[in-house]
Image 1 (spheres, rainbow, N blue to C red):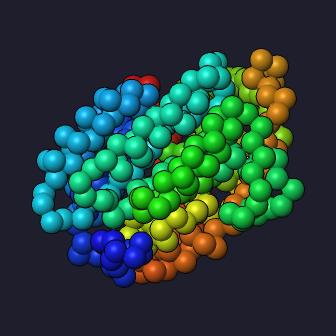
Image 2: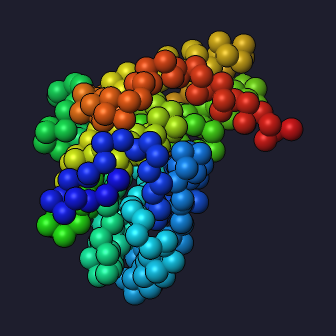
Length: 317
């Protein structure tokens, strides 16, 4: 994969092409899995371990990483570092990390002597808010309802100001999960309770509907987009398959043969909760097809939950 000078990625296939990928958020849930899958595919991954809110530190860390890259080989950037838990107590922290941190990275990239072939930036499907259209297409007008989503949308707008200087790809991943995700998130919390055979679980908003895609699907989508994404393109990272919370609980009951009492804790209820979040995957499907890969409709939620249960039960021993 390389930039052909006109802003398009010249390669038609990612196979046989080794990328040197600079990765932010490498120690996070998604970053760890992305690193593993990228390396399995033959790519090299370098973690950018730096406080993204400090512009000088970001610039120095990036310059050092770029200088260490093999000469005359394509390199790309995947920006996953973010504050992502919607219920985080400090609202201003979202903007410091998600907006200013991203701008610090882009400013540092512009100052490099050679340009990356792709800069993939992870936003969030939460920017859509309570959207009347479903499934949601990328052209839908965003309407964020919390600080996390608002910070991601602000980030998107400011990222686009670099469109004439960097080959950017913006992504909006819908909800996803997998082994290793923090227990503060809904699905890992449920899995942990079932793995421990807890008698009761306290939840907030029960009447929600989400995609709960596998983290591997998200990471593979990112890898495909590095090779086949349109510069300045925007992509929903989604399958269009949604589940109600009741359905998730029923699946865990079936997998564990354990019943559990579900109680609503008013402290966990969000007044502005998004009721349904379902994406249209058509644009992303075209990228998977361009990569010659099979669209992962066979990756069931049961399979993801089963892997998470095995990991959670191992932690309990």
